[in-house]
Length: 196
Image: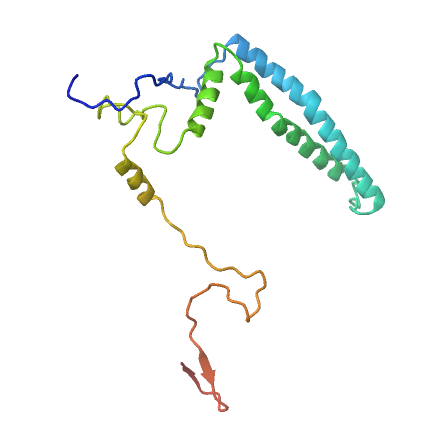
């Protein structure tokens, strides 16, 4: 023993450090293959069908008179807009599927970063899976469990907001929760004014 208390559980798994994935990261061949696969699949199986469907629906709404066509360009601007929105909606809808493909890669730093990011979100407050680069010189004790006092400090630092009563109708008979004082000015029949 070196005189310091070790609060780690004897059989606890120590997670591997999270790999640094930055702008200078060069993907592996397998990651490049998955990127290309995700790009093709999201285009053909999500973007094209959603773009075509949104264009058909838009043209149908224009034909029925629900949407108006442009006096000079006709339905083209609205159809282009619907196509672009359908394209991006298709790409965005495939993000989770693509992330799962990367998480399933064996020796992928990107897959490891995605897996560890998911593990970090599932940990309860006060538990951390990696030391901050700023506290590495403080001590070599466990970075997995913080003391109850540290948790209380974290809770005290978070600002507390009290809800304001809200009224859906904005008439004078219902309280809105606004407590600002507005000076009342009175006017008599001669035009004289004074504050109350």
